[in-house]
Image (cartoon, rainbow, N blue to C red; front, side, top):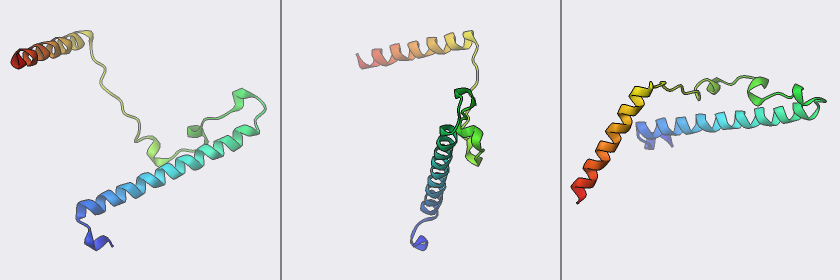
Length: 92
């Protein structure tokens, strides 16, 4: 009974339902792709599940990160090493 839950709990229940629906659609798409690929004569004509049909959550899963320059990576490495040295010196 949704009226006994808090607002946050209802939000989580809705998110859980949506995730389960997305997983079910992914399963259906995968099984459909398997059926299509069984009847293909050449391996080059096989298709990927994402190419059979698009789903709304396909674009959500793609996360693009920032590409760092070499100098930024070296600075970060130096900062981490200094932090580790400081933590070791505090323990001793």
